[in-house]
Image (spheres, helix red, strand yellow):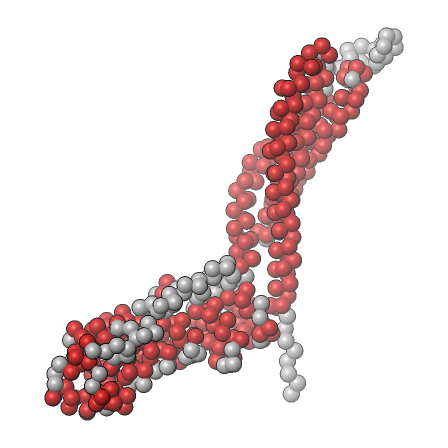
Length: 413
């Protein structure tokens, strides 16, 4: 690049620029072609010389247009450099009627790490530049909420940068983002964490202003997103109710009409003295009958408990998280009921099979029992693990909520 042109760009001397162009109209084109790092537009934008940048843009040559999007060795175009150095006057050209198209397109170019010009403002603590660009891009929430290659929005980055030395500037940036871009509050990074999650993980979460701003804005943690996700399981509640009703009906029928029927008369003679209405099976196979009554009663109680829990949760439990936890309990209860009714069916079947045929009937009974155990065991494990996770998540959320809502004592005057 011509030394005089570089000096003029550093100083923002438009008079020298006009003189140089008068001597050589192709100077800008030649300087761009021979440039290996920062071109004249990079330099003038970096130093905040708005008039110099405007004069370059007015040339409206192919080289000028290319210079707007040219990257230096760090992968940044002139508009990016203006944002990094907080040159608000140059950034105003992004919204300028005359130069709107080129500068706007250049401003929307992503940097090498996948971030936007807004990420650069946050990273380099340029609050005023960020204010201006947020106003300019206010009608484009997708751009404002864009994530870099690490999955971080500008609010994630601002919270992470809150650990740095320029803490006060970062606090102002966080507060401004919460107020002006509330739609990015609950966006999650690649780890599934919101900005509030990152804030609460830091010692700086004692910062009262930021905490209060998060609370007022309705910010949520990544765990609270889990509530919305788990709430979708409620669609299965009607199916559980149907299954519970069928099992309850079958269990009740089996109790009042046991296998083998009931005695139709009274008798004190013979090997089985009885009274009319008593179960025949209780006299002939007492062990099977006791086991049968136990499992049928378990199925009846579990299925009725499922129905009762369903009704209670629908009336008394309004929070999605509570209703979801109750749903898992209902699933656990219906599995107990289903397993019990299956075992009861096995006992019922074995009690009515003649002794001479029981050996031949063992495979048809044992194989389904093994299959049932193979199905029910992982289901019980799955429900147990999820119930444990819900308890852990609930405990963690309460702890985070307590930290979020705890007030800081007012300083004594």
